[in-house]
Length: 134
Image 1 (cartoon, rainbow, N blue to C red):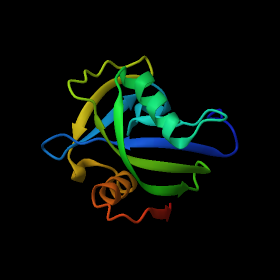
Image 2: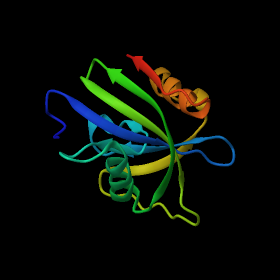
Image 3: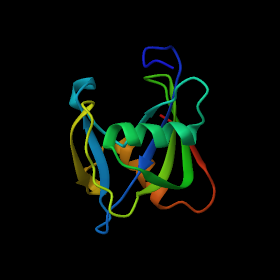
Image 4: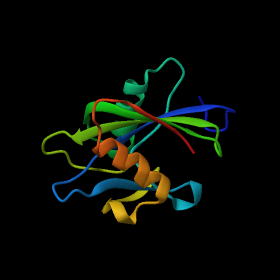
């Protein structure tokens, strides 16, 4: 699916460090916004395969998926977003593609309200996949 399609699906990774901070990437598009690694599904891709591909493309390293924690509908952009708890492979080195200008580890209180809700849902996962509408 293309970003300009009427309806979108995307998969994103919540990756934290030993200090409990969350990895965000700064886009070179969309007004330079910060977001979780991941992106839109291509036609025929599963949500898991899309996440693995997007993270390889964006960061030039592999991630390991632990679990799917939530599915969120964002009415402003007509999109369902799948949030996964992930971690970087051991000794991973992040090398950003031209889609992102930098990466940084953020404290939870520094995230936007919606981003923080999705991340906290993921970090507090109890086995039940959460579904919310924004």
